Image (cartoon, rainbow, N blue to C red):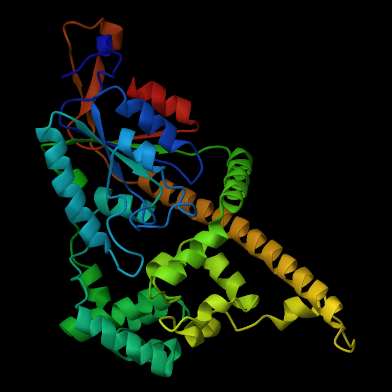
Amino acid sequence: MRHSSDGLSHKLTDNSVVCLMAPTASGKTALAYELYDTGRYELISVDSALIYRDMTIGTAKPSASELARYPHHLVDIIDPTQSYSVAEFVADVASLIDNCHKNGKIPLLVGGTMMYYMALLDGLSPVPDSDDSVRARVEQWRQEEGIEALYDYLGQVDPISHERLNATDTQRITRAIEVYLQTNIPISDWQRQPKQALAHNPNQQWHALTIMPDRPWLHARIAQRLDIMWDEGLVAEVIGLLEQYQLTPNLPAMRCVGYRQVLEYLVHINHPIFELPHLDKAQFYDAFGGYSESVDAQVISNNAVELSAQSLLHSEETEALACQQMQNKALYATRQLAKRQYTWLRKVMQLPHATTEVIKMPDLPNDENTSIDTGMIIKTFTTMAQAREYLY
């Protein structure tokens, strides 16, 4: 066991697992780097966007030099055309935690994908992964008949999920149908089965640290981060992804905040990128309602006869307006993401955790003796500085 004399908290036993949970743009990465520099931690990313290769600017991914100095597990592990389930994430983390402990390190799980954290802390229902052939079959069905047909079918085979899900929730509707077609058991039945969580491992000491910063402060940080992303070339990054990969608008990678809004912008300005033969232009235009005449109408009079120079001017004005709308939508979407993250964090705070047992340490003053849980410890802070103090 390490004690506070080495600058690290006596709360952290050698079998500890630390989860640093906070909303987007709240400063998690800086603290993670500082902790890594102590030599006691390995970093495990808990971010459903950082898993994708070549998606750097819009995910606020650490630079190549930062990743070289501060290696992260589970960063750049799949292409944007691939999928990565929560169950795969949990299995990977279980193996990584064991390896960290074998290396004499404490796993530091850092990121903002709260659904991943809940899977670790509260557990997963034993829902099987979808078979690739079944997934392809359901996707073809969706493309041919629309999500409405799948939603109606779900009402027949799984009324509970049908009532729970929004009719436009493509991802969860298709997943529910995939599970039913593969197992002949509704996903709602699978979800009622007992959960098993990594954090329930009696041989590990989990510290779930939730940071809930002041909303106005966080909103200012979000706006600042988005400004940096636009300046660094997020639009160009998305265009590069479309050039390199056979993307569709319904891929999980393309539903990431920021990337979604850029795709919509590119559709609305009729960007020539969608003419590439490996892209299905119709899918992108169907997903975003085609060319936005409403945007054009705000700039160009319906009755005016434009000369070529004026047409060019109006085209530039229309594109500028569409760009501003894209940025506004990305800002709103990121704030909504943060709002959902706060909701998840409150759920974490309500999870049951072990009662404490006071463990006396003879080399510490009586007032510094602490309670070390034999189960999960959940702590909540309002600033990253408070979390830092807890870890030192």
